Length: 424
Ligand SMILES: Nc1ncnc2c1ncn2[C@@H]1O[C@H](COP(=O)(O)OP(=O)(O)OP(=O)(O)O)[C@@H](O)[C@H]1O
Ligand SMILES: C[C@@](O)(CCOP(=O)(O)OP(=O)(O)O)CC(=O)O
Image (cartoon, rainbow, N blue to C red):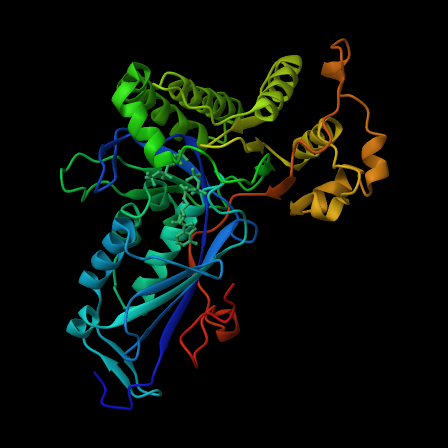
């Protein structure tokens, strides 16, 4: 290590996206290594709207590893954080910054401590895969800081040990997590099926039904399912392998009808497994069910899938439309059934890519009031509207994988103090 005054701080900042599974991961065969019982496939979401930003810093003056999440210090003692830190440290390389007079040798990393600050631009632990973006970002930024020259596949297998779904956030576009077969997990990695530009027309609308923290975490929920659900066994052995194959074909061929049918069926089966668990787990609520009905009625009326829906371990809906035109029709329907509460304006109700609002002809709450029921609802009574049942919508799309942020202004840690710039 450099013999310069032990004051220096070296940092790296990265941003990583979340992902939404269209063929779900649910169930582990190894709890410590986080090895799944089936393959899964996801879409990486645009980091502009749903991502984690993480700064990692190292300095000889740091006395212990510390982490702040959304401005609040959290313990890094958990096994998952420790496993990620250990695996990255094992792969750390030599780092030299001649300008700052810093030289860190491979073997120095074992005794140097890190400070980590991370911020999610969306609700944490609300079923929006914050752990996926968070662990992917932690591993990616540490790998950059420590000059661990690993392939993304190798980094994905480290992120997997933080949270299974995190391994899929190392790539943009469409990603498959191969369950692998090695007992040590070396082949349980993510691979990119297609980049974010492959199926550019897709539009994703997330309905945030509740941003409160959920009662049953994915980790304990899937453990209980593995222990008690016979449906899960059948799903992992029989249903998923064939769906994975069909989903890969649908993505390759831009076959939206097949993509939508598989996505909805897999979400429904995952929630059926939750019901088949003892005691049963309920992640969706009445609003989630209303959104499913809205889409199913519309798809049936048109005779071909217009929109796909999928729900993770929470009540929030992720809706996928094949293009902006259909996304506009979807948004009109969503705003008809779930208008903003009276005191809410549209700026805080529709987040992300708000340009779709313009196309939907909805500029103000008044325009929402005048929306008419969709044609498929004509003879269905009652046409009740549920103001306030959705907290907000996020309009987004498929996006790129992790990226390094080189502008120091984007760092979350002060290069002077080594502590987050904002602490709450
Ligand atoms: N930016 C982050 N950096 C590091 N860890 C994070 C970050 N964000 C979340 N986490 C970790 O993930 C945990 C939340 O994971 P949890 O699985 O409960 O929720 P979720 O990921 O939002 O939902 P789900 O995985 O069910 O979609 C947090 O308590 C924290 O430990
Ligand atoms: C329903 C899911 O979102 C479950 C995600 O589970 P996690 O990856 O959060 O679980 P752990 O590996 O225990 O951290 C489906 C999916 O993302 O594939």
